[in-house]
Image (cartoon, rainbow, N blue to C red):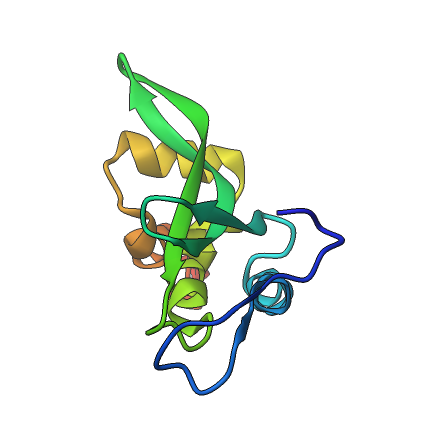
Length: 137
């Protein structure tokens, strides 16, 4: 989909047409509020399903041969006649915001320890020092 063109899709059963271009813009804005500059939102048409998919591409880390390596990953959501808004799509990134906003060091360490990105915040909090930790006896 070109960034310059507006794509409007009509599905039977929808009360109003779905403006794909506008939905991409709104989703990008919402995602940028949660993980600024970490996700590129776009829409891709699938000829097999006959509809567009909202796609968020981001950098992730995986373990390959015992080493942690960065890879491009993506989250998609089908924009069919049951699609209402991008809330479910955006919630994926909200759930992983602490992980996605963390440094490469912490992301790699989390992967080495098999920490799921959705559980990163709780895991990372285990390493934070509290005031009581700093008080000497």
